[in-house]
Image 1 (cartoon, protein in one colour):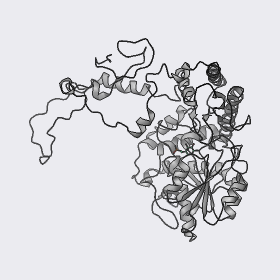
Image 2 (cartoon, rainbow, N blue to C red):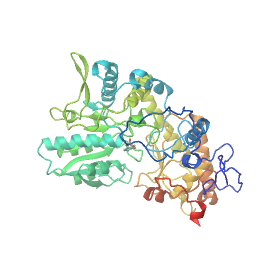
Image 3 (cartoon, rainbow, N blue to C red):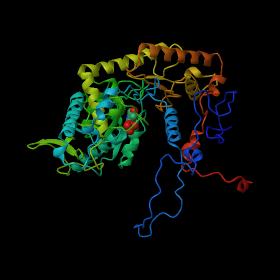
Image 4 (cartoon, protein in one colour):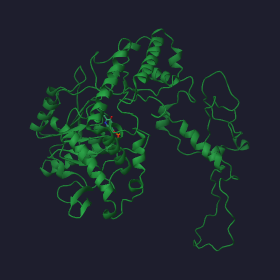
Length: 517
Ligand SMILES: *Cc1c(COP(=O)(O)O)cnc(C)c1O
């Protein structure tokens, strides 16, 4: 088969028995690597041949050809546009990826983030010339501390996991300041936690000890009490947890940790379910990251940069990293130098400006009441999905209300020969990005669905009817619809393990026919 440039396309096509000459499927273009389609004799720009000159590069000028793939301007344009169309996105359809809060990103956010006063400034500009940007940081910080009822905030971390690192470094520094660095070396992490939690604790030298979950998917204060001791520095607890359930004993757990001399780190990635309903500070939390790129719109994952500010309790505020914004006589200043108990600096500059603008635009356009309603609608939508599917799909913790995500297991697929993975692949044929699969790890064959508040009733109904159709089909024994899926995608089952373990990161030109023989 040939692609548009008359070159052979790659193997492993979509399954349809119907084959096309070009490899394209309808208006879905097959797109080869730019190195395969580019030709050295083609260029997208017309440059005049320079007049004779003497190089002044001290003999360092290039001698060999550059070998860049050449394309005309329209070919280059099509290449990148076609690649962009291969990406599923929240702008294209419902994106039910649990634990990621893939909500609509209002275009107003984008418009604000592109204002030159925010987009075109430089981090090394004199602070007197960026007072507006600093005021935005201060205001965003004010919203975050107000929403969470916490004493301080650091806007430095660039993602959720980076926020965990920031909060845990503040905790580690606070423990060292008490002279307990050598003895308090253990961090408790429930076994349902996101993998970044134990990874963060381990990265900065703590020993991780797992807290088992109760039968209903929550953490039992008695289990925490049994593990608490003078060697425990902190607990890292997610709330609502990764099973989509509010940790109802969170205050009791905080008390146990505090009485034992430890700190309470809360993973706030699921904050979307409780904004305006519950204040983190009232629960006894000492540090919590907030994924601006989940809770306050802009998609999580490959959709752009993230931002993971950390809010801190009064006990930890003094240990926050630099830089941070402070009001002074002369206006707002950016405190760059480590003073007092600050644990230092995590990155060169002050976080993700574009994300700060988007998050504040989202907050201000919603208002306090609107943010609370967004959380209520997110929880309502998840429960609607749960109730509309729980007669046919099984839930690990019984048919009880969830927060912003509906969790199913694979018990209902038993005996069908169909796995969670097969079911997810069949969703692709129906035009849906799959839900989160096999996470949380504590649930067998987990399917974690997070519709978010963005979806209308009509959109949810179509999604639910699609899943019901698939579920009935699975139970009727129409196995091939699943085990062969995706039937209609440009690529089918990829060897994901090999892609992760032995990634091919460099393109090498194919051997000439003669050499290959
Ligand atoms: C998304 C998420 C994280 C990590 O956030 P990143 O921004 O991806 O680094 C941590 N914990 C939980 C529960 C999450 O859902």
